[in-house]
Length: 313
Length: 243
Ligand SMILES: Cc1cc2nc3c(=O)[nH]c(=O)nc-3n(C[C@H](O)[C@H](O)[C@H](O)COP(=O)(O)OP(=O)(O)OC[C@H]3O[C@@H](n4cnc5c(N)ncnc54)[C@H](O)[C@@H]3O)c2cc1C
Image (cartoon, rainbow over all chains, first blue to last red; front, side, top):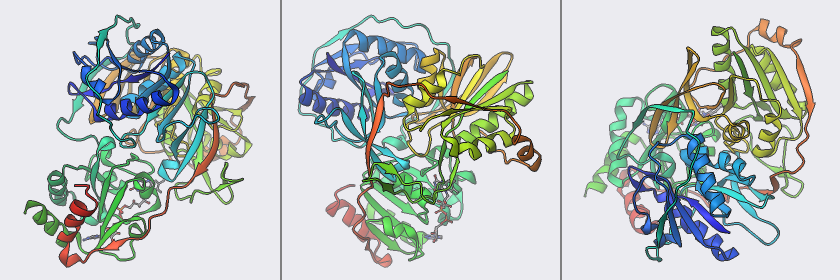
């Protein structure tokens, strides 16, 4: 029996969310007295570094077919079975969201997504998960013997005080995918919004797409991802992948800077779990100020140049 | 072409979320319920594809009788028939297990990317695995040509194009289409369209909801003088230590 982590990677590097998932799994491992095994089907040749975060072994399976929900999940599920997984941990990224339900079915497990707590084992196996698009949390119990947990990125501390661990390779077979990948368009070098620790976001108050030069400059200076409100993506000023809120992406960065966004309830739903929130708005009555930790009541076109200048100094 | 669309019925997006019964139940009092926004996109695109390919669209919903107005809305948008599986639809696994029982024989099954209440985002993958068909998450485009479905889907940091023969299940993301608004004729026609009710039968529930909490309220905003905005950078660097 073991705790198995799906080690996700991007651009031939393990993701930060993978380190979070392994650190998280290690905590569960200490609670239930089991080892953490990281399964690396990413094509990265050696995963020994995952030992630092708490894996006691890395199982490599060379998968050159690329990611498809059906074949990748089948492959991972068959490895989980072989390793006798009792708890399976993934990140709740686009990849993790595609894989976790299929793996849960294959293992006849209980699953929870958006998980933000270590399980409470005092009376079953209960975890806290985000619901109502960030407006609330639910405590849910996973009733079946095997549990699949997809954890929210940026919710757990990375613990890297271990050391490299042994690796082994495994030959697992999965039926080939029925899906064929025609084209992949990835923006490289940009931080995916769901995993970003810092986010600079702007709304209709920026008046037009040409003014995002300032937003991007500020974001680049602090190493943040960019986001926007719904009308901004609806009008095509920004790509819809940047739209946060109830009908967009829910994010949980350490810092969320909202510029020229009023703070409508549907917008707040997607961002209110951010650790520190800064609102910049020229209207002192803007609802965002009620949900912010820091605020500047002022014109973005005057405030932004000052912030950029201060960062350059 | 037979298409099945799974819809959930959720609280209106302006709802202030509260709980009752010692924080174990979502407080439905005064709440307006709507078709989940992503599911409306799924219904719309399903109708467009069915209309172009001489097909039919069936709606399935796991829920109690009070969700029938939302099912009728989907019918008034143009769907041919609906099935309601009678149960309280609290968990994604329960919902998928119930739907799996009626979901065979369709070329295309659509869900929303996630429901805006429980945000599971799992029904598409769960059903795909249960029916042993491919699942394609968060699609922004669906085309059908010569027996093949082509999808654009969001991936971490980008977008990809994939193709696949039916049967296949996909989850609708914003950008897929503009939601169709029912017209008067559709609303009239929906009243007499078939709505079949089936009793739920899954007993070994995978997940139970125990209780709810609300996020801690912010302690109040600290305002910074706009003429000295650089102070914000100083605070974020040295006090919050976040940049
Ligand atoms: C079903 C539904 C779902 C929705 N889902 C979402 C969602 O997921 N995400 C989302 O964001 N919205 C969502 N909305 C929309 C939401 O209700 C708001 O309309 C939207 O968030 C407003 O965007 P905004 O703040 O950019 O624009 P506005 O409300 O127009 O606010 C612009 C703000 O900019 C300020 N401003 C103007 N000029 C300046 C300046 N020079 N300097 C500084 N500040 C300035 C103004 O004071 C104002 O507060 C949804 C709505 C519905 C009905």
